[in-house]
Length: 148
Image (cartoon, rainbow, N blue to C red; front, top):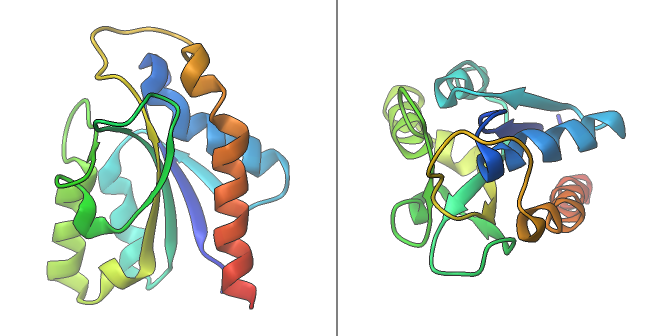
């Protein structure tokens, strides 16, 4: 069974909406892609044993618009996925690992580097908007790996 692709973010979060926009683009191409504004919504997918490709804006020292492929253990070390409320991605993945054991082995993260959000905003900055096509390509490549 192919991974479900889940884009996280906030629609009025400026660059933090990048995960939603990548998922929307992939969904329009026929990929099983969902948009999610709350990281805790990942739990049912992980409980069901599904593999997940998670797309989210991350803050790290690299330039905005850089596309990264991260392992769950790298969150908080190499990059930080953002949460405007509730549980963050790292906390949800840690909880899933505790509850369901082995869940982290089924998660891959495509992070798009963003600046830390300062206020509500619509639309992406030019640097992050330019990462949409490469991020979609990375997700497609990860899905293709599963089929081989």
